[in-house]
Length: 112
Image (cartoon, rainbow, N blue to C red):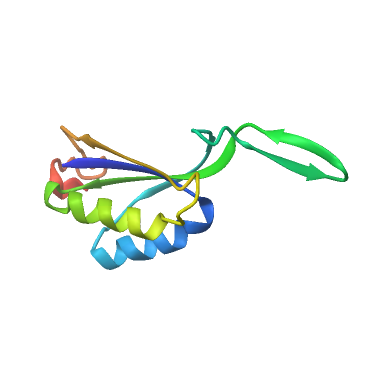
């Protein structure tokens, strides 16, 4: 199994979620996060005063998926989240050794 973590722009969440559901992904965790990468934040003007925003709001998606869906999920997220501008995000893939459903004690892919 794989754990996919994707950092995307907040306004792309619905598009990414809909594409993943259409692909057959059964669940995901969504977290509002803040951070910066190469773009190093941005400047905003409020009532005539300029402010430096160091941490940019983003959305973090986490999905535990079977190995056979890895490439399709990566391609789907990348396609749905892409705007073509700086700050589109990143996708991280990790191996998952064990998953246990707390309610039933079930483990492995069936617990996802």
